[in-house]
Image 1 (spheres, rainbow, N blue to C red):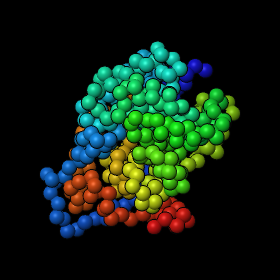
Image 2 (cartoon, rainbow, N blue to C red):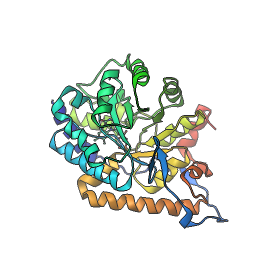
Image 3 (cartoon, protein in one colour):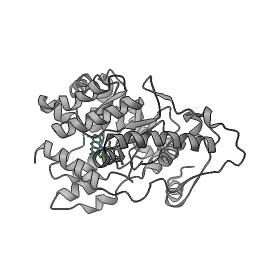
Image 4 (tube, helix red, strand yellow):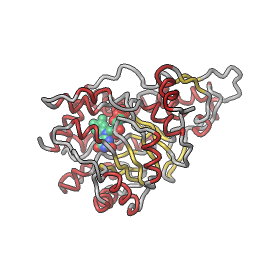
Length: 341
Ligand code: FNR
């Protein structure tokens, strides 16, 4: 199967995946009876990689390298990013490194959104010279390196040897002229993984947990021999955030995986994330309802976040990171088992 066909299948499958619940259901805000806040003082503006952004939301890595269809998707998502001054990551650029004709499907993002924080993206199989080409290709402000071994294992044509990946990351970090962000692709991370990534010198970590786009289900739907046990594999996003936060390292982290509403965004920030990434939500809304619907939903989320901040007695994103919470159910149980407070 060609890479182009695989990209097309991934998008179609991701759009069809139904998410029936939020991975953040075990997280509950504590009502602040004695309000001291003012709606008009609530600010969502923050900074990311030294540029100011209007809200802590990232259009997370998805596509590129799939010809006209992915170029059109990237152009429209870049319009959204430019409209709101929010960062955007491109999909894996290995396709363009292997085939020059695909470069325009990524560069269209920079052409459409010259002012945004734009993140390059490659898998941890990449070399430092691949990384430099990916950064140059889109004048990237940062570089995401994804760790996706469950997806690879679930893919018939996927990699089977992951023994060099951490070393590749370290070599890339040493040579990269821009900050490097390590990310998962929807199977989450533990504190041990985050600590190791910190030691490798990354600038930030995107814990990308379970609860949203599920690449095991996507790959299993495309193959004869199903590895169904990977469908429920991984670390849910809120747990991955709590694992990361428990290390108390000077390392910003990004929340992604199953985030589809302003409530999810607020909860992810309150669990310590500096930025919240969404992929599945953007591709579904864009493909099913169009770009105006995407802009309307982000506008609504922005407004709703300010309502929640007012209710929680905070005025800034930084203050939102410290609001009191109750952690229930399976999330609570996991933290107990792992000795995380
Ligand atoms: C992805 N994701 C992804 N991640 C990455 O680092 N490089 C990539 O090329 C891709 N490609 C890709 C394609 C499509 C169609 C989707 C939906 C997703 C993973 C993505 O960035 C994110 O980590 C997960 O999708 C979890 O977030 P959501 O989708 O639950 O918000």
